[in-house]
Amino acid sequence: MIRLIDVYKEYDNGTKALKGVNMRIDDGEFVFLVGPSGSGKSTVIKLITGEIAATEGRLMVNGYNLNNIAPRQIPYMRRTLGIIFQDFRLIEKKTVYENLAFVMRAIGASNRELRRRIPYVLQLVGLDQKADRYPGQLSGGEQQRVAIARALVNNPSMIIADEPTGNLDPQRSLEIMMLLERINELGTTVLVVTHEEELVNKFTKRVVAIQNGRIISDETGGYYNGEKV
Image 1 (tube, rainbow, N blue to C red):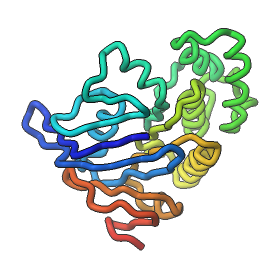
Image 2 (cartoon, rainbow, N blue to C red):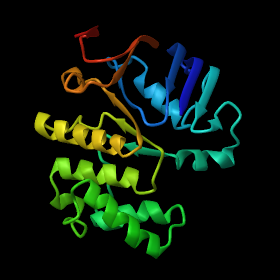
Image 3 (spheres, one colour):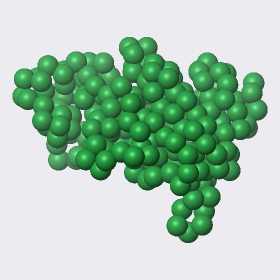
């Protein structure tokens, strides 16, 4: 569960990125966080992942109180999250299997665990026949599927997808979003950060809209130019 309670964030340069944000995401939800560039979306994600701290307010992430979390606990908090980026961030010199194995070994997984978990996750994202391929041998949509598999492989309770379809054409974007929807149906909480309103409108999900550092709406349904449709 994620909770932001009266959260403010002012950066050192004086930019007031968040101005009293309240948001709760319960376990098992699928939520879109939408808003224009500079609205505060990225700041919310950086707060949730512990990259930055709030100036004021309270923040809870999957049982961790980020207001007084010890530095040694932050890696354990981050293990409850799987992050998907717009630019994939795959290791080009490693195969698909090796990319996933790398993040599993980072938390001490055994070879037995790798052999059990990686094939399952690759099958889930439709890449079970591509385990020995390198990222450069895959299409953009396939690379994003690898990035999703990498985010899932350590079995996080929540997936955060930060503009996951920004580099993809509309058809591939829809396929990626449908895959995230399926992952959510299997029990993983999903938060998708995007400005692609037309894509959001194809799904009947909870949409939290942020603008100028404030939540301006929080409803289930599609949005176009900030107005419910």
